[in-house]
Amino acid sequence: MKKIIIGAAIAALMATGFAYAAGHGDAINQRKAAMKEVGGAMGAMGKMAKGEMDFDAAVVLASLEKMNNVAKTFGDHFPAGSETGMDSEGKETTAAPKIWEDMGGFKAAISKFEGDTAAAMATAPQSVAELGPVLGAVGANCKACHETFRVKK
Ligand code: HEC
Image 1: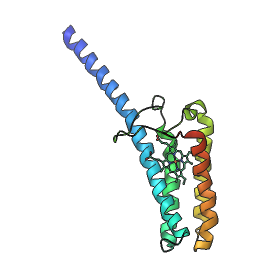
Image 2 (image 1 turned 60 degrees about the vertical axis):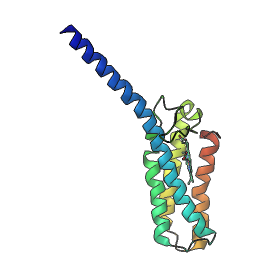
Image 3 (image 1 turned 90 degrees about the vertical axis):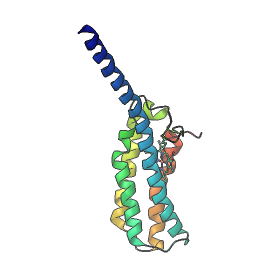
Image 4 (image 1 turned 45 degrees about the vertical axis):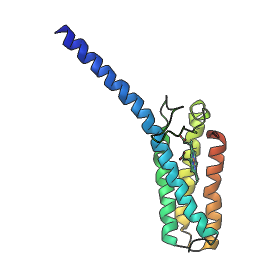
């Protein structure tokens, strides 16, 4: 009987241990996937701005909305313990230690991104000329946050 209880306790501990480890890998996967979406959305709008892709107001709006949605949950993907590690493709996280040193500042940067993308959605650009300043305002967030909260690897 004792053996079974101890065995069960060990199994339970191991299960939590695995869930813990997987949780961190998941967090890195989720935040990288989220940022890839943001990068793709930015890329499409950038191509329109440069005339490499036909302007499409619906795609612009969908791209801004995608970024706004990412901003809403991005802060959830940085649990303690996920400072280092790799995604499922073996790519190391480029999240900077600064995130965990200044979680308030990081969350504020995410809120700003959420606010600026919402404002951009509200303007709903209808031409390349209108898209330019919107991209400028949204794009400033990428640079500002990456400079402070991301490391080059
Ligand atoms: C509030 C902070 C913040 C904002 C705003 C932000 N990023 Fe990021 N971004 C990050 C962090 C942190 C990482 C590193 C994630 C990791 O490697 O764990 C990252 C990583 C990335 C990556 C690499 C993803 C990968 O596959 O490793 C791309 C691409 C990217 N960001 C694009 C953008 C673009 C484009 C914008 C603006 C439209 C943007 N980001 C705005 C914080 C931000």
